[in-house]
Amino acid sequence: MDSVGTSMGVLEGEPGCLVFSHNVALLKSGHYKLAGQLVQWSISNGGPGLPLSLNTYNSLLGRSITNPHMALHDVTDRTLYQVVDEVCSML
Image 1 (cartoon, rainbow, N blue to C red):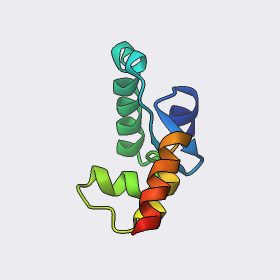
Image 2 (spheres, rainbow, N blue to C red):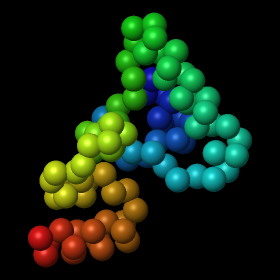
Image 3 (cartoon, one colour):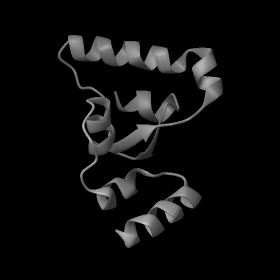
């Protein structure tokens, strides 16, 4: 399942701490749907799921982010990272 995140381009970030990428071209071409089908097949056959970050996983389950400083590590865009880091430092 690691190749779903690395070679398909639907995930980005550090290994074992991946977040979904924002790519309209991949969405239009069906890559996200295919990735979801591959993950579903893997899980239904006893295999692993995606190595998502804890905050991404909790967000998918509808849980809130309790530690914004830890969530900062999930921000892959450098400019946005600096903005969020500045806001977190004010908390």
